[in-house]
Image (cartoon, rainbow, N blue to C red):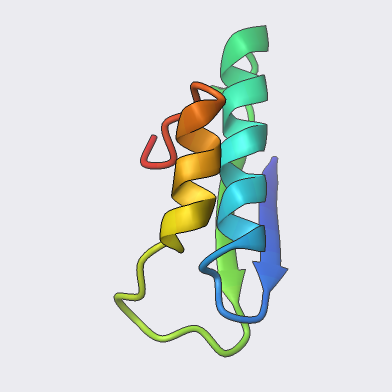
Amino acid sequence: MNIVFVCTGNTCRSPMAEALLKDMLKKTGRDKDIDVISAGIFAYKGDKMNSMARKVLEEEGINPDS
């Protein structure tokens, strides 16, 4: 199964949703069954995740790069 989270710029909402779901799937052992990605309808190639979004995930023990 494939899941795609889409928002405007792919710097906050959709990459956070991707990281959260990937973390949940990994904890339940379903990470091999489901592929999760994020995208943005007005995203620029090479844009990075917003630093505050990254900080929130890291504070919750979630690696946004995995």
